[in-house]
Length: 458
Image (cartoon, rainbow, N blue to C red; front, side):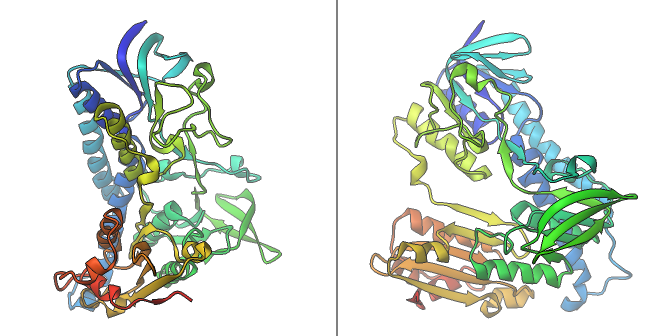
């Protein structure tokens, strides 16, 4: 038995930051990582995918050069090996930075291997048993593979393997029309692939309002992506060197044949091989570790952070998990998961920035509310850049004047949303921003204007 003051399992967004705080507080910390330092975000999530999004945007903009009076000799090509090499370099630098920071951290011992609980406050890794009064689980998640007949008989990609592609698929079928699937769909269409998106729900990104889903579907279709919503995949099979997907829609079964397939239908936590039962740590029916409002598990002295706790599936929620845990155990502050405001982005082009409730959710409350909308084609900065797709929508409580939610689909929507988020955290009425003077020409300058044009939500 090797005793430490704390054990951190996993090096996603929460783990390394917490390890540094614990060491700074004088504690002896063990960090366990079974594969890649940096977790999902650095290795198979945000960093590689947004790098690919950037390359795809460059290709798309180059093809539109003539719209800006710019002449490019010959057709625009995409070198997929160069695209992958750029992605690998950026990911590698981030991963190595996390690994180096932990391995050179005085007071921190790094163990590389798979951690499993072997008892109360005891973890085994590489045949070594570790003990600590405090244990923090930050093991992340992975792609969920649906039970589709024939799927186990054909090759397919997940988000983890798709980022390592160094060739251009002729025809890519994507199962799943939500955030991961749509980002890859637009990326590979812009690289030059034929792309088909198949979504079982009646519309894409079904958690969003219908007008948002419709607008996203429209600009993806405009780029040549075949979008098939309300379509259930009932089987997959080989057809020569191709993959045939059987789709049921409107009571009829059709077949879509492609060269490659990406499965992007949900995520699952990496908790099924941790020996959680040996420590008495409770999970829900989906395998997520059950935690309270301060991220404590069912076992005192053990916390779960990041994707594995089911309280958020984003890098920023994982980082906020670290802040909540550190504040409660090291800073004598009372911070809770329930204090945070839901916020995220969809990184299509244009992007979607989201905060708080959707319009549908506001309606379901039954409370009197007001709404303000603006088309991106009316935003001068977007018009000048020639990127006018999308719209902005803000909802407020009629009586308290507090912002309830916002959907910003358009140029810089993923950045502009933060002005709204900050106002929501400040619990300030929308009238504060109404009187603000923003910089011209920007997208954000129209937020005060929108705050002056609320109308009752009918």
